[in-house]
Length: 230
Length: 264
Image 1 (cartoon, rainbow over the protein chains, first blue to last red):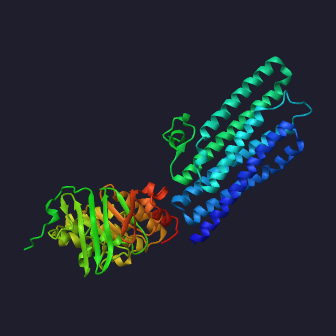
Image 2: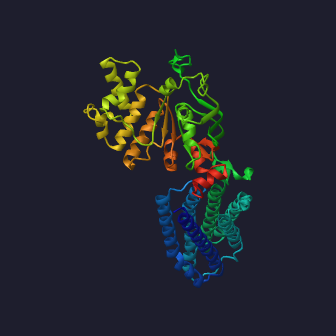
């Protein structure tokens, strides 16, 4: 009975990793599609929207089934709890990818206001954070979370600088307002994805150590900060 | 004349926590409990968990000296309850057991009426007045959450009650002599889920007035009802702490492996 539970948990974990890789790919490719205004790529992402939602439902259902049948405890329980939270974050990340792809689809004939640099750079940082979260989940190694807080700060700064930059373009030329608003939105999405990566890291940290920490300690909660912790 | 120390003589004084210190129990050559030390908090529920044969029931039985009845069983170490070492030869186990009641795995009512089951012990202790007995019986049944169900048929045989009701009757019987500690050795393992739920609710109520120590094989049950949990393995206390911590993130690998079903 217990072996069956652990077998199923293993399969579940693999599926979460699969889902994570898909979510990251959707986000990564959506920014590439935006950079090159590549409709084909955007279409590929939009075709995955249903798949990631189905994965979310399917994993959730199987996880709940395991809870009902086996009432897991200790590290098993923490793993189950982590999976349940992670799939929500991953689904969100995938959906942000979809939202960006949608912008590409509706972009029309207009070119970029200028060559995109900050947004793709931001995407690299965010996707690395997501990657590190998924890898840590797979290997139970939490050493990669050490600089998550700094990386998250960098993403926040990038978002702000993109916002300032777009603001000045819009003041100069009202014709770019639609495009610039889109850039601001994309930057916002990417910043949210970094937050999701941090949240996943917190859940994985809990899964591995049993301790609840906060990566970004600005929220003033009772949890200890990972910044000073690790 | 009994020269032994009567623990009840220090009457009306709340004795508080139980301090188990370096307790060893041998059944002949079998070293069943190895150097167990733990501090059991009063008015809380402490659960003992662990695989079969790990010594949890043996330790439980030390707390009211039930092991004295087993031939070849040797106990050493100290269990201080207030300022009395209850393992000391000078302590008379009979009054001790009055203060430390016990409920067993299988309900074991006497083949008597519900009333007589509960009145049995108070009568032995010299309470004869009808009114006084009636009050004790009513109060015990109420505390054991059984009064609503059997209050109108106290003269019926206890053997006619359902398993869950019988078990609650046994708890009521324990409560009739006003113990301070209640030991429960797998109190729900012979009961169906509904009766189990009732006993668990009852344990939650009991801890307001009594110190409850429960041995259970059902880890979910331990997680639900207890405030503190001790995990035993091969006669040793491996880990002891707050129940939430033990079940959420045990510190010891053995505990972890047991919880996640990797052995036991």
